[in-house]
Image 1 (cartoon, rainbow, N blue to C red):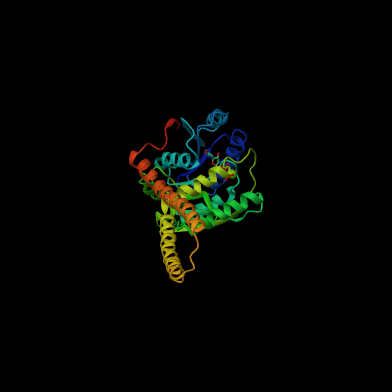
Image 2: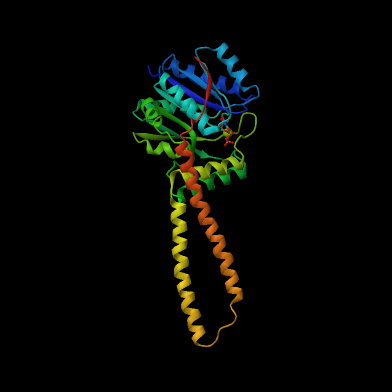
Length: 314
Ligand code: UDP
Ligand code: MG
């Protein structure tokens, strides 16, 4: 029987851990009784360096349900993407498939069964896709949807409305383990893995408790990281604008020459000042963008470890 691991990154989730553990254990017992997954399937909580009661609660869940609940404690907060990677790559050697899900139960745990069915039907990656966001606040909905659209415009292939709720087979995880980059954007990496994939649909619920650990600042950082890690379109855009500017300046030069020979010239102070400011700003943007990529190269070259596991409960 195929062993399932459910990987749950947790950052300051003390209000949620027990509820989440309960809900996921029910899912596991149900699937085990239906013989869809092995009796040794388990939940793997990853504590992303929270200093609240998150880890002690994970330890106590492990003591109460040693067969069902395992934990990984990261030494410091590394962020959702890295915590999830730590969990997936730890689970990889202990399972045949792994589902990643947020601790707050916003993603519908009942579709895990559909994911497992889809795995048995021969899919290596099954994406959980939100088809209803009515429970999200207006602000979250607009910013999140803007995020997916913007990524597309910027040339990053992602699955629309899929966050990090997905099932991966062991061999997909093995391949994922070969991505050594420090700037991780999982939603961009997954579609490049290949194999057979499918989607399951669900409506996104509200957090069971606690509040979002993904404020706008972190969302913007995620989007920026996604774009600069996967696409050189921003640079192309800048080059395009540059070419357009050259075209415009030729037209402007012809126009001023015609005016000059026609004897209509006026002291060109205003236009001169305007263009100095405009070009100055434009060059700063261009240099900044190039710098962004240079910064990424710098980080990659250092090959820093991406996380530091302090303890593993097994
Ligand atoms: N999370 C994490 N590290 C962080 C921030 C968040 O592991 O630095 C986890 C968090 O505990 C949750 C998941 O990532 O399980 C998604 O976070 P959240 O639900 O706050 O994001 P939202 O659903 O609001 O986008
Ligand atoms: Mg959430």
